[in-house]
Length: 173
Image (tube, rainbow, N blue to C red):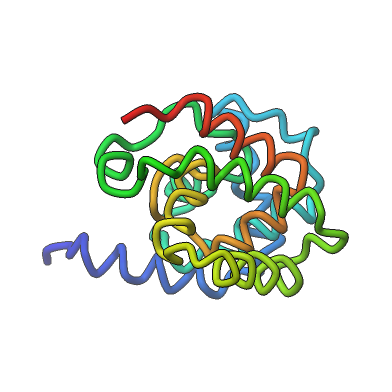
């Protein structure tokens, strides 16, 4: 009898979907530590919410690191292909403006921040895709991952603004 590795991955993926988020977060803590994250810096609720957002994207607990890194470590590098394609000439100025929009938000939840930011983009006549991709690039370091405003809600207002400004300072075409 031969073991079908792909079928095994599929079963494991299904298993991960069934594991309660808090349990999966506990299973993930040693992997966070292996990657230099001080788990004491993050509440159990924070780690659980991060894992819950991405668990449908992984086959193994170890895979969680690649898809949750954004919640624990600010990007220091930006995906070159995404920068070439998504970072426009006006991106630094628009992202600096965006920081002021974010700073003015009382409620930084996804439900409040998303319509405020999207409304600002529309009101200014900016290209939605260009702005949102540049925003994601500064916060995440690449143009993929969970819903942008779910990310910003979890990492918080100060961290989001800090990452956008770091992106403006560090991303060069």
